[in-house]
Image 1 (cartoon, rainbow, N blue to C red):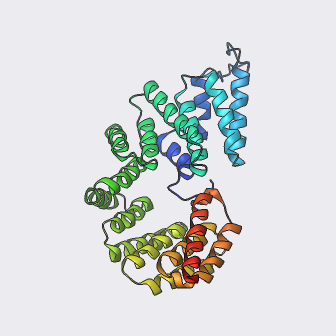
Image 2: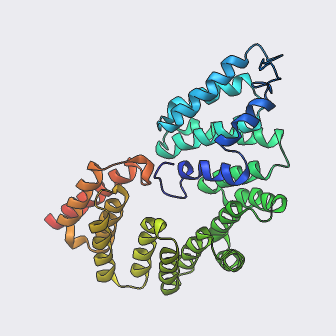
Image 3: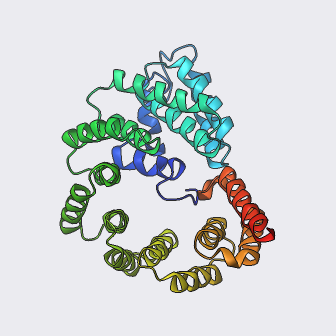
Length: 327
């Protein structure tokens, strides 16, 4: 799986699908449901396949290959053609929606992909109104596009249909963090109690506590998650740095960022966040901020999180600081 921010649209595609039962491993089921693969008889001959079955099958294989190569645009094209052949495929609609999400997330000026994602989620919902997978996927999309009230409706429906699905619960907590942080914290703590071995809920708790301005608890919750699940450290470090800023420990936060960079010097998102920290909290260190920004630009990887537009905005802020110093 791509090394994207764990809650980005790209990063959760496979995780959501796996948790809800729609993944590459279910391609056989997808093919069978849409007349693309017939169960072979003893003589190993495929019978009664639709005329376009070969083309549809090829499109699915080409999509998988494109996805594995991180070619989002080509993957989208293959899925779109597949859906034109199988418009009643729920999985096809979902994957097409996710593919459009990936492209929109990295190129937010391409509003047409946002529209296409919304349209295909809606079509999938019409085809499978009782599917927790569809409600959860659409709810996640709505949450990421800041349509929180609509997201809450879809995620509550998914929770009703699949109460113990931990991915849906995580999305529900994230949405409630924006709408009702207190309720989000209560649900999160209850989930941790029931699922002490699930890192997602401990990670979410750190974000909820940060939202509630409980910065010391947020720092400790992130550390607890890192101790238990060290492979998730990289984005939790950023949560800890933000908690230190919230506590007013600016110098400590700066040192924290520098320690992060010593351990992960090639991660674009860390350089971006360090530059952002300097501009917002230590504008007198503009030379170091410029150096950090240069590093971020040289390492830029859209799949890691902050978009190129965000880098440009940091550059503009840095230029403004320089102009003010010259006055």
